[in-house]
Image 1 (cartoon, rainbow, N blue to C red):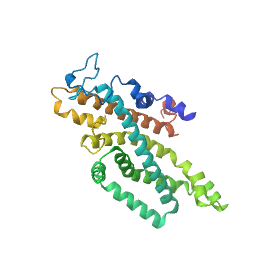
Image 2 (image 1 turned 120 degrees about the vertical axis):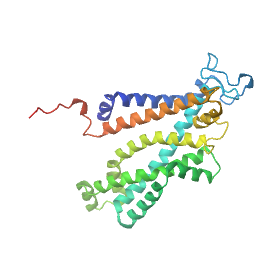
Image 3 (image 1 turned 90 degrees about the vertical axis):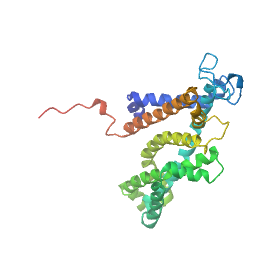
Image 4 (image 1 turned 135 degrees about the vertical axis):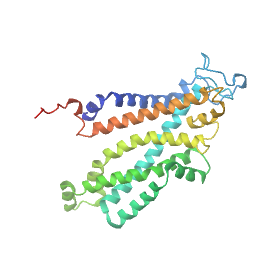
Length: 285
């Protein structure tokens, strides 16, 4: 309740949340909202400009762009949830173990994280996806695997602080085993920054999937992915710009929504910033 009170006073965060809700609704109800089948081709209507019949126009195969954009929202939603779910699970588990046990375990996990972070993210994803048959499942897993390292370092830093707190030391002194102690006392006190990181990571995951689909390593034709739609329209930017413009705008809007909501969530979960709007400047001395 306190989090909601702090969040609802941040208009940009609420606007970002509205975009996320819209993405979820479109992703779930896309088949009912789309005016046409996104895979149906009608060469007689190839490259038609936006009109009352086709609000976003048609592509070179006569497919309705609006329908494909609506269906593409489902892929963007899935890639965000699946990839960040994998990154969250791996990152939190590795960060907890690393920060709690320390020593050689900590050194090993952090060196693995350093190696992962040393490579440019997109190049590492290209290498992973190129090694397998291109497809959405490979993209989901690859983005999740690449994203675990940053979360692990974040959770580790929180765990190093929490493990030294009095209530954790007391639980350990009473004989609570490590697994139960981590689950009941350490994990709940390290989740807040991880949740914020995952929310912001959703935007990055959507951009990465679009980039991989753009170069042909993500969603395969005729799947309506926003990245592949932009790629399909790059040869028609002068004659039919709507093929690339509308999916590009969709990507920009969704990424902006996640970033705004993530920033607002971070501020709302920080007790030092919750009352920022009501602070009164100190009197001059």
